[in-house]
Length: 148
Image (tube, rainbow, N blue to C red):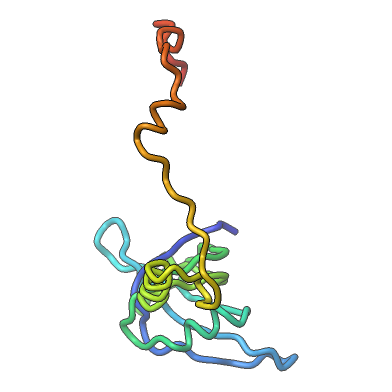
């Protein structure tokens, strides 16, 4: 399996199912843009509560970014041509809603859950960066080529 970050648009409506043990899970299909201009379909399954809830709140055509364990597959189309496919077990789901919610919370000085003020570390001013930097840089370059 491969740790992956996939982004694309939902193809169809995500569905909720229940396993034999009674635990709910969500299924979805994402159309991701391939490097050659063709679309690549990613079959998504989510078992944890947060990614399941996030997927089920979306509809056909919504943009989504998913992270999780990716498994490459091959399937045959109607003409019998081998086509690439991907199966993803989603661990995290990020949508435009999540980005907007986090951005607004940070602007209000709240943490992401909205309960208490967030402690934001301030970036030092340029003068502070210069004061921390070494003043004598002559020893940093020995003139030798780098081994890449």
